Length: 218
Image (cartoon, rainbow, N blue to C red; front, side, top):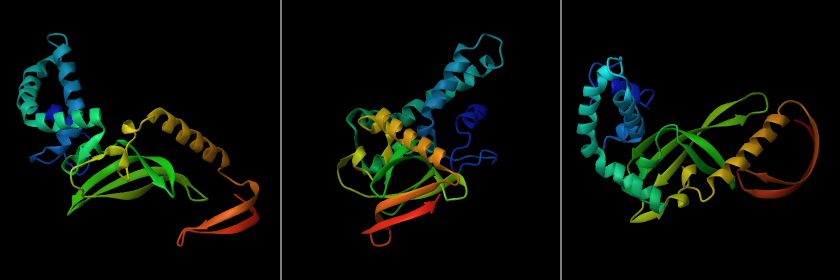
């Protein structure tokens, strides 16, 4: 049973599986986030040929799933309802931000896709830490950014949040295509290239636009 839990929760945020004892508290966030992995591992041992190493774990896996299923049912059902309706309550926000989830947010009004690194609840706010691929003029690599979701009453559309899973977007595949194309352009432009520009520039600190024109090397 411990081996199954360790495999399902491998690399989950802030969870050290090397500790001698684990304690999970309601609403059992890590297990809810990895519920599909638990189900998949259970199917693997259930379908394994008799006498195989995986088949030997069947009794433990059956007992674990029998114990967890009713315990997690409220959260799992709520997540299913959120996926169907596209609406969510503040109390359920954590359910849609498992580590590793691809999410949509905006940088200066432009949509971008990031990957959730971790989530953290504070008083009246959720901090969602994400990573994305960036270029600083010399190196290309992952950098992190944080978005805050403030508490709200009632229910909200998932897509109205400052960051939300790309799977909830009306046309998630279109967003992925646009972002992927933009990434390919960035990849092609890395390095040193001579460019001439004429137009406006936005001063990030003041959001003020001014005419600009110059020749530059990128």
